[in-house]
Amino acid sequence: MVRISGIDIPAAKRIEIALTYIFGIGRHNVSTIIKLANIDPNKRTKDLTSEEIGRIQKAVDTIPTEGSLRGAILDNIKRLKQISTYRGLRHTNQLPVRGQRTRHNARTKRGKRMTVGALKKEDAAKLEAAKKEKAKE
Image (cartoon, one colour):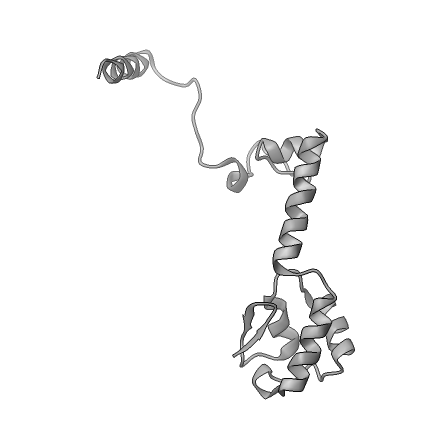
């Protein structure tokens, strides 16, 4: 198994697909990396020589990936929150940032559904009694 930027690259896949397993490298970046490293994109990872792996590693080092990229993204979000932009406030409230609607969807961001203010009088009385008992203990 080949290890590039601290990530194990799958051996059976073509190199242009295998490099996308690294965070921050997509299909477009792969084409530039392969051109820089001067490698056939259809070659399998297991067929690469150590010299070719070294060239790929040098080409990947020119692009921000993995930890440095994740840190940069977190710094950008922190900056948006600090200067109180609309996007920063949406991040703070854990709501969708890019204009999606939240009336019916956005379950992954908003979490599990919670009913608010729709209790029958009997149920509300039971709930209050349970809270009082818990407070006494």
